[in-house]
Amino acid sequence: MRKMLPVLLWDVLPAVAAYYALRLLGLGEYAALLAATCVGGLRVAYVGIRERRLDGFAAYTGLVFALGLGLSFLTGDERFMLVVKSVTTTVLGLVLVGTCLAGRPAAFGMAKRFGAEDEATAARWDGLYTELAAFRRIYYVMTLTWALALLAESTARIPLVYLLPVDVMAGLSTLLLVGTLVLLGVWSAWYGGRAERVITGS
Image 1: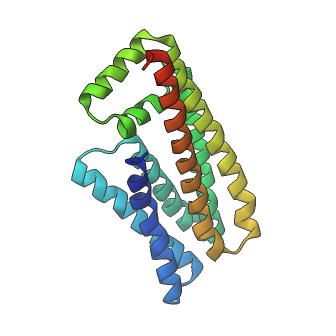
Image 2 (image 1 turned 60 degrees about the vertical axis):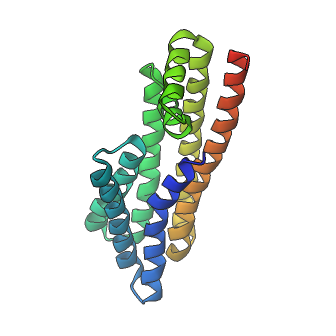
């Protein structure tokens, strides 16, 4: 969880800050959202170039920005740009369900990325995953919980986009996503740690 928060903050806050800064300078809602989307995309591109790879979380963030940018040129509607987040979150939720159906729940890879302190810990987790059905079940439960939460978050955003002012939703939309991810991260850390201790007897 300590590793997850800085990633979330650096990936989403620059775009939100850019939006409100441009609004204070007098830019319109649509132009400010468009510029903020570009800022978010530049952040993802910078990380990908610097690390020479694009992991699952960064790829998802990049997908949000790319779809928002592309559809904004087609529609010219600032509210629709905000709804795009629900589309991508829905897709992510469905992808998570798909990883369970494929037999490799995504939560296991996320847990290793954000929770494994070193290669030895990651290797131990790989061994537990291979040998213990109960250990694998932990990550199926985690992945499906994430999927359901993200689908609920995406559903809740759509009516809010059309009920609240754009200036409110530009920040609130991001807050909904980040808040959901943080809560899921806290729950996953508790559930995963508790379940592992029960299984390993430590």
